[in-house]
Each structure stands twice: as structure tokens, then as C-alpha cells.
Amino acid sequence: MLFMNHLFNQLQAIASAYLEIKIKFICWALLLVGLTFNGQAQVLLPPSEVALLRPEAVFDGQDLHAGWVVLVEGEKITAVGPASQVTQPPGARTYDLPGLTLLPGLIEGHSHLLLHPYNETSWNDQVLLESQALRVARATAHATRTLLAGFTTARDLGTEGAGYADVGLKQAISQGIIPGPRLLVATRALVATGSYGPKLSVDADVPQGAQEADGVDGIIRAVREQIGKGADLIKVYADYRWGADGSSQPTFSQDELTLIVQTARSSGRGVVAHATTPEGMRRAILAGVETIEHGDNGTPEIFALMKKRGVALCPTVAANDAISRYRGWQPGQVPLPPRLQQKHESMAAALKAGVPLAMGGDVGVFTHGDNAREMELLVRDYGLTPLQVLRQATSGNAQIFHLADRGRIRAGLLADLVAVAGDPTQDVAALRQVRLVMKGGVLYKQP
Ligand SMILES: [Zn+2]
Figure (cartoon, rainbow, N blue to C red):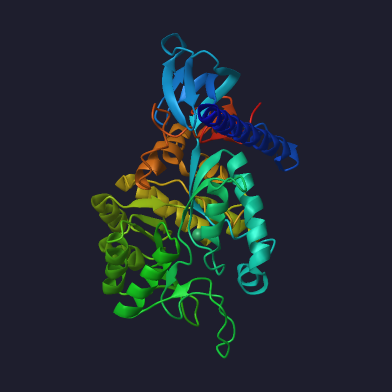
């Protein structure tokens, strides 16, 4: 009897474990059915499934290979190569993708998910008048659009007055609560006192778009605080439009910038610098930042220094283009506004010096989901080839941002994959024809 009881208990335990698995499966299925993005139902791939993707060609992050296929198991890529060399495991679901090129998920290098275009609402008004709840709600929609545009990772460079909302946003995405790209977040960003905005009357101290910090103690405390709250990297404004005349000037001293980099680096994190002036760029480069954002007024000497120190430039040409348009300039109109003319000259110098380029557009200044605009402009107006910008947005950004688990299509890496119609290595416009988006083996969009 005792034995029978024991057996019965065991059987009961097995039955309830089975029931639990079944309930979990049903919940998962309900979740799949229930999820709608932009009103369009999406079919998600259960994480344990095996999928064989058969596109027209595979761009592996470096080169294009016609006739290759990719095998995905769970959240990883497990095989890639010519169709004849990749064995299809039994039970694998096959996705035939004729006419499509499969790419590594694109990596946005400079976004602000908590901002929306300045022609909708000025930056000042976004920072001062919009509630945190409104900004976060918008950001969730921005995250979805970014992912569905084929960007499975984004480096988000500052909440611009929305505190640590990017950390929560990142958690919501990684926990599967909302769809969005994998995020690297900078949280509040660091500025020298008095240098940033919004700038209103000198009589009023208004909330700022970033955290002010100065001097040894202040800087160390601010960097540590941001890291403690969840910053994956530190963003510093090495210069900004400062003072009554509104001219861009270096802000932090060399010692302060060096200390910021040392403090961040001792925690295993890098620093990126907003810099547009030659002196601001020079100090940031010497301090050891990993990327310079914008670099609008960089000179041949400064770009030579960047090249020598291995610092990448994230040129954000799309932001310059967008801001010029908001001020009334129309594409094709000559002469170019001084801002754009200067950008062309500095980009020519950067390319001549061989500075590595990160791909990032400062999206948020313009519409989220329109991230490919940076790549289109680099090809159309700045002389890069589609292949160059495609490498930058995949393997290039992955290398510069230390993301060894993505940016290429290779066995063992994350199954972050995008399929576009046509051949984006020949025509950058193909990047607008996103037909399939997979992140970590989960399909968010399929033909
Ligand atoms: Zn920015």
C-alpha cells in the first residue's frame, strides 16, 4: 500500500508537471495570437523551434553569398552556408524567401527613443512640457517601429530629460513586454554646468536635458550614479552651444574628460562624446572616448588623430539633413546651407584620413523607423558605396560597440536576422523593403 501510494504520488507529480508545461504552451500560443504591432498580427516563432531560412542570397556582415541558407535553433544561428552543405534537421520549419537578401539585424548607432521629430514639437518643449508618461508611451511605439524597420539593436544616446526611462524601456523589451531592438543605453548623459539646455531666461533655472557635473568629485559621483542606475555606456557633451552668443565651445577640461573615461572604464564601460568643435573633439579623443558623435567641424589634423587613436566617427548626417529641412532648406536647393556645406567638407576630410565610421543617424531628431535615412544619405550625398554602409550598420557597429554576439551571420551568433527585397549591397533603397525581421530566433515580421 505504501508502495502504491508512493507510485500514485509520483504519477500525480508527473501529471501536474505535464499540465504545467501544457499550460505554459497554451499561454505562449495565446500570447502569439494576442500580440499585434501597428494593428498587424504577427506570427512569432516559439523559441525552441528550428527554422531553415532560404533567401536568394545572404549578406553575412561582410560579403554577399548567393544560394546560401541559414539554420536557426532557439535564439542562435547554428549553421550558414551553401544549401548543399547545410543539413536540414527533421522537423525544421522552412522559410522560402525568393528574391530576398538575408542580412544580420541592423544596428543603429545613435538613437533617442525618448525624442520625436523637432518639427512636431521643439526639443525645448519636449524636455519641459511633455510628461514622462507621455514620453515613455511614445518611446514604446518608437521601439516597435525601429525593430520592424530591421534594426534589432540600437545604441540609445541619452534620454534628454527623461531621467532613467531608457533603462526601464530596455527591461520592457528584454522581458518581452513590448517589441523593440536590443538596447545599449546611456541614461541621462553628462554636461558641464551651464552648457546645455533648455536655455530660457537667465533668471529661471529650468530642468535640463542632461545631468550637470563638474570637477573631480562631481564627475566621479555622476558617472557612478548613472552606471548604478543602468547605463551601459557614458555619453558626455565635450562641447555645446554655450553662453549668450550661442557659439559652440569646448565645455569640460581635458582633466575632467580623462576622469570621466577612467571612471567609466574601471567599470568595464566605454564613453562616447558629442563633439562638433576641433578642440572639443581633440580633448575627447585624447581622453580615450570610443566614438565621436557628429564631428561637424573636424579638421584633417583632428581626423588624423582619431585614426591614430582608433576612435570612430558617428557622423549623423541625417540629423544635419533633417535640421536643415526644418529650417526651410529643400533637398537639391543650392547653395547648401552653411551647416551642410561644412558637413560635406568635414566628411571628406574624415574619409580621406581613413577614420572608421559608425553608422548612426541621431534618429529621434527625425522619425523613428526612418533609420535607413542615414545610410541613404551617406551613399547619395557623401560618396560611400551601399556595401560600405551595410558593413558599417552590421559587422562594423558590432565591432565598435563590442557586441561580439551579433553583426554577422555566423554559427553561434544571435539569430538577429532581416530579409529585404532586392540586393542592398548594390542598391541602398532595398533597405526600405524589409520583409522579415527576426530577433533572437523570434519572428516579428514575415512575408
Ligand atoms: Zn543625439
